[in-house]
Length: 221
Length: 207
Image 1 (cartoon, rainbow over the protein chains, first blue to last red):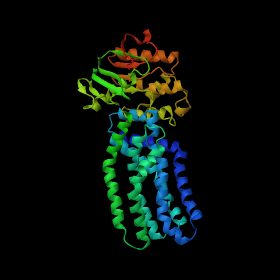
Image 2: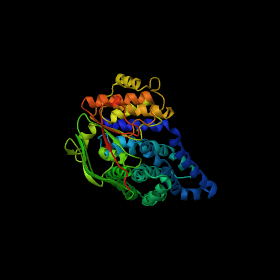
Image 3: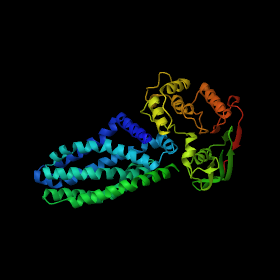
Image 4: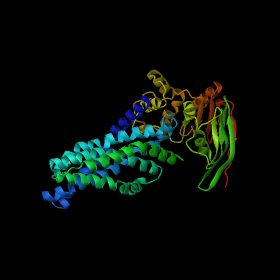
């Protein structure tokens, strides 16, 4: 167990040494969201209607920017080889790395979300629903994204390919998440959408670490 | 102790080697030689288990390394082309995290001692990417003195090292082999007498 906390500490340590890489996707998200009132219409009703979708799309796009750093450095400098030869279970290592990635790239987004909700004139109920969908959906982004990162890490210029692979996979999540917030706007119950997202999250949490480990092994070959 | 049983490896439709068998026992220093592209790195990666051979298997102490990986990895130290050190961490942090991953008891005094031995006094806290190529290599090599492993697999360990560094590494190999360890290494320059007795294994370039 202490072996894995070692990796946890190492990754956090590195993340905070590379602050620019942490802040950039967040700034990107903030800017995309601020462009909408300027580009579409600053009318509060319009913003409220498109708001949930805008925030979710911006979150997915900005997560793609941050996704690559999950394994890129470790692959390029050989740390991944050393992990594989350490005798630790690779799925567990992958799970730890994904957890750190979620902590440093999505928790700041959750903290920022009240501000975004205010920009787009979301009601309190909508904001709560948005927060819940982000809370359940963002670990899912990290877990599923990591599989694709593992597959593309050995390729030069894997960035665009990563986006092409992942965006279609994230469509169901986007649909359920925005539909939950829309239901909240109409004062309707939205537990069913949350339950579906939670089910997807549980499935990913159970299976993704093994898929990530396998994809990393394939990349080493 | 470590043996490859008729392994075959092909890359991009070119067979690098076919039905190659190779064994090393305690006290062996095996020096793998061959032109660029002959498959030296591929062979070493197969021996570590990082790559899977097309056919054949690798055995450590008579057991397939795929079936009993943790026994093997406890006794293995691999240094590849990539140093495995993170550029934004210091030498000290890099080694400490590496030791923790490999389950080696962390001893601060020992760590400083080894860093002094490889000539990194005063550079312990500098992020590794600010060090020269040779110094970065030395950070990676410091592991040889920190983890007690029987099998050393070193891919081009002399790259970027100065004359003194080469002598130090050759001496380390000799000491390791004399104490019953195994070293498998590749290099484009011949090993000098400093490294002690060694066996040469030639890999041919195949078309």
